[in-house]
Image 1 (cartoon, helix red, strand yellow):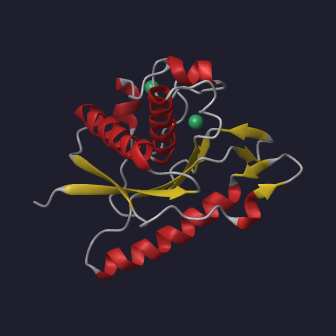
Image 2: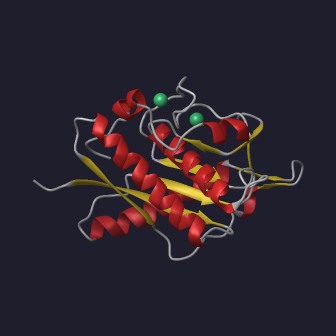
Length: 202
Ligand SMILES: [Zn+2]
Ligand SMILES: [Zn+2]
């Protein structure tokens, strides 16, 4: 039987790349792969950058009143890019992107929740957005990498059906501030790892 490989597509936007992006992709891959020991399904992950170079920040995203970028247009960008990438993948006889994650450096604001956010995702959907903008505060490069990995894994966890977890060290615990982010691990607790859901068709 063919290996069930799910492609997690990363779309860098703005000033995003280099070592931070590479480490984020490695960290995402490792966290999801580690979770599979709690699953009956044999699912394998691949995490790859799906555009050649970082994309421009969506023009409509800047909210001059807040001095921040709205997160919603980044979801729009994710949908546009995924559609194009999927078309190419299907033409090549490959499976579509399983999930799409926009990773950007500009601080983001959610108009829906009326707060600044580290990221957001469609629960059980295909898209997630994470920003390092607010994660940079007081952080050395190693701390920033760690925080970025945690937030990426967290938002992708939502796309695979997970809600927030009450185990404070679990990557799915809700982070209201950087103290919370630094206090959790980049891994799923056994309960969350076992509850990740993988659609057979997408
Ligand atoms: Zn969350
Ligand atoms: Zn958990």
